[in-house]
Length: 110
Image 1 (cartoon, rainbow, N blue to C red):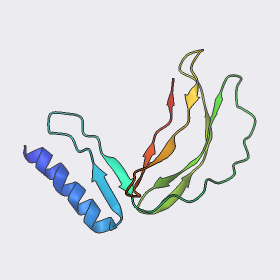
Image 2 (tube, one colour; image 1 turned 90 degrees about the vertical axis):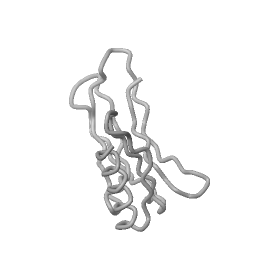
Image 3 (cartoon, rainbow, N blue to C red; image 1 turned 120 degrees about the horizontal axis):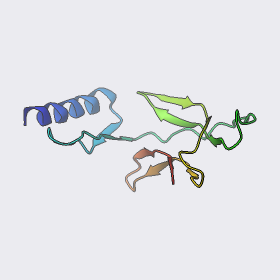
């Protein structure tokens, strides 16, 4: 229980320090801790990326995106190898709640 309280306290501190951040989804002491970051400020428009040729046949381009690290930082796109022959990449995206908060939903292989 002490660990769960520490997680909640850390989340409250993060909200207080950032002023525009909302943290939800803290787990319990016995569960894996997962924290979703909700940002009040919308991400900038995506940057145009020049996609180079793949390093090897079959590699897939994973596009860049804006990430929140106490400010907006661009994370460059890169190539990735699929985990199995029929896998395809589902791009990540920003999800916006009705109250205007934004959360990054990670891309994944399907």
